[in-house]
View (cartoon, rainbow, N blue to C red):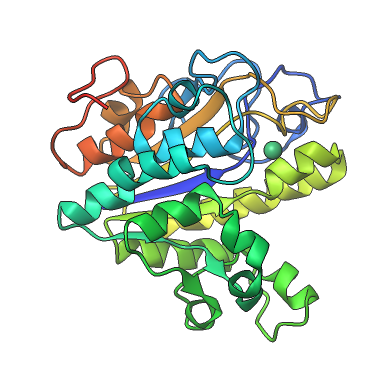
Length: 306
Ligand SMILES: [Zn+2]
């Protein structure tokens, strides 16, 4: 009984307008998501339009959104605003006491963060000083960051999942097809209770308003996800795709959007999982409940004081 969580930065549910929304123009199996959603279970998945604003004015941003996803807490409300970019001290405090990684480890389960970090990351003083939320969450939980050694052994993926960026930078690594990368992620997930992979080329592409690239990214993600699903025993395991805020679904503007984001769920317990999801802060409690880690609740029904 494992959970694979594919986190896709900046993927929202927008209007069914193929002139501005690549998800409306997409011919992919899983990412043609615009306008009305597929009926529950019809194509083997549940899709939930999921609030990312969390009732806080302004456009949702990555640091608070990802903290909400990882902790189940209303991070933008607790921080006073939506925060973009690196992890602040307040968000780090939330992650230290509430992150899903820390909760799983405390319950004796094995979480994994599949992304590999480069030597450049460990030498970059600015990035070490201003880390991302997912990096802080791993560190606060005592999880060693995966490196290119893990990548070479097939035990990690780079953030673009094909290694194309690293090969372009001169690293001696094999290029993976999206399908090979998806199979690798599924194999990693089979060895852990909860496995998260973070993909953010979608958000960068949304800010760049690059429509042709957006279509290619969705095709690659589709092949990646299809292989990850094919490599997963869905009679036993759960696969979840989620995002922190909209962006890619409206290329008429450079900014994030206030649109809901898709939460897509496949596998055992998918319907019960879907019923728990209203906002992005419901994801961690839903995963913990699915894995039967006690004392969890939702924003609407908190089991404990913050
Ligand atoms: Zn962004």
